[in-house]
Amino acid sequence: MSAADVPLGQAADRSLAGRIADWFTPRIALARVAWLRTVLYLFVILDMHAFVRDTRLKGEHPGLYQPLLLARLLDLPKPSVANTTALYVVLIVACLVGATNYVPRIAGWIVAPAFTWWVLIGMSDGKVDHDHLALVIALWVLPTVKASRRGLASYGDQTRSEAAGWAIRCVQICLIATYFLSSIAKLRSAGWALTWPGSAVLTWAIVRRPHPVGEWLLHYPWMLHVMQWVGITAEFLSPVILWLKGRWQLLAALFFLGFHAANTAILLIHFLPTVVCWLAFAPMERLVPWFQARRIQRRSDRHAGQPEDQAEQSRETEQQPGA
Amino acid sequence: MTGVTDREQPGDIRLGRTGKTLRVLAAVAGIVLLINGSVRASDDAWPFGPMSQYAMSVPDDAKIDYIRISAVTDAGTTVDVPLNIEGAGVARAEIEARAGEIEKDPSLLQQVADGWAQKHPDQPKYVKLELIRDTTQLVKGRVEGPPASRVLATWEVRR
Image (cartoon, each protein chain N blue to C red):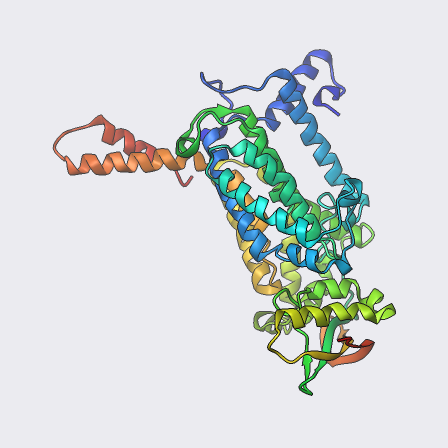
């Protein structure tokens, strides 16, 4: 359904639809997309070796293969040594090419379906992880953005584009959806009741994955309950982050990074494929101007005595990043 | 934030009407799929399924099951099979998810022995595998005593 279907008066209708459309397509500098491409395509290579790393093994032993809905809809072939090895080689090459930002769209349109298939095979054995939503969607939306500069020049490209904004917004939405929908799943599994935060779920998790931090916590069930309340509350409120700005958004991001650190310590679940997508919120387009400003300043410091407005300018720019 | 202000600037690359409409529709469709997945679908709908990891409410008097595979080797020792990619080439969660099937058809355990033998050719081979369920009892939300073990399936490994 399009935003234009919102039932309001004719004039208000158009402006509201326009405002909703603008929210989905903010103007964001193309440099952020360039950085995101490099980081995410390299992350995919890491992911294939560290996280969803059993895809080729499933090609060797397809006995436990149970295709998921998407694989059945597309009638994807059963994993074999041949097709998983081909997938591996294609992914590595396309990711390396995409990460350079030279032909990012062509490489991106290869990575997106290939990695989706890779993860689909990896999760077709009765167990599905929920940490890949934002990453997989990011790979599908990144190639929709047309770059105006190639290679190294793309990292500093301050040209703002609505297409870039849409791609970034999609990644942000999927990232936040991962948290928000986790709280919904907790309500649903209890028959739409709020019993999860007071239950013994963390105790259960620790008993099944014992380790020193967790076993110490088993003696203090009240602490586990506090964590459960904090977790589900934060997850439920997470959509607010989409409308936060500057410092507040940074604080929220840091809170969730802490949340993942705690999860890693207690449950040994790192969720890195989700964590890396927080970069969609980071104003990475400021990195190159910041670095250039520093260089100019250092140079002008060396030539001290020549009063330059350049140096002053650079000091101003320097105060921006990090916000 | 400089990057996201919507004040018009010369040089901004705008989307055409069609491009913008298609993108907004795609985003809304994706959100609808996600909500549908969370409200009614199962893991089968990946990537649009529910975010159900650790989503269940575990009662204070729950029995906590832990599935493992114990192996007798040709060196005469009994070991716990390392259920991960580097060990027997299969993750514990996968065995857990398929425990019912393995109970009905213990021959599925043959893969575990093959996986181990292939990855560790210089180590003792498995000759007999047992799928075991350890059950820990919770009392008022606390762990009560050591777990009780039950053998679910036994498989004599084929050479």
